[in-house]
Amino acid sequence: MNKHFLGDTTVLLGRSLRHIARSPDTIITTAVMPIAFMLLFVYVFGGAIETGSDSYVNYLLPGILLITIASGISYTAFRLFLDMQGGIFERFQSMPIARSSVLWAHVLTSLVANLVSLVVVVLVALLMGFRTGTSVLGWLAVAAILVLFTLALTWIAIIPGLTAQSVDGASAFSYPLVFLPFVSSAFVPTASMPGPVRAFAEHQPVTAIVNAIRDLFAQEPVGSGIWTALAWCVGILVVAYLFANLTYRRKIS
Image (cartoon, rainbow, N blue to C red; front, side, top):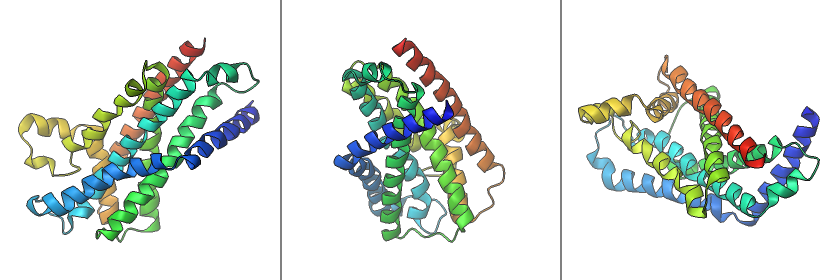
């Protein structure tokens, strides 16, 4: 059964990746908005924002990476919605393939596409002056956090992709996720925020994840912060995975 699942997922993943290869504008579009935010905040607002960091782009990049992922997963919901509306799922059900492989192919496609977008954003940040002396292990830790965050948000995206009634409805869910970093430590220290806003910012997942990535890039001691970030990522991933699969079973039953 595992061999059957892996084979089916690989075939369907190849199908999805071919669609992206024929339409690379989705990856470009995903990267454009975060890059625009980075340019705006570094070159327009950066001089007026006090972060205590020598380089504002160094401070800013972790939040921009999360915005890149939140922007990219809307395409997962969009592609899944089109498959639902196009009758692809009905055809797959009539074939001897593992049902779960259909969702996993979309999830892994999202992971590949988002990783490409993240690389593009990091390259632009390097051109803008981003520098880090972190080790290979530090980069691997950052990559692991970003992969977990991408998987968590992608499984959230699966739910509207299965249940939306329109294309706009399938992708609109991502808007709050894109703007959540603005109420976190991504752009300014939470200490500068008024009481209620600060309380929310300090106890939402984006702040924990941003702080962990920022500390890894800056070669600062991460302490328990990295475990808090990982706990948020894994917790969201598990809950989203369970709800997405429950929704999927109800949809195809």
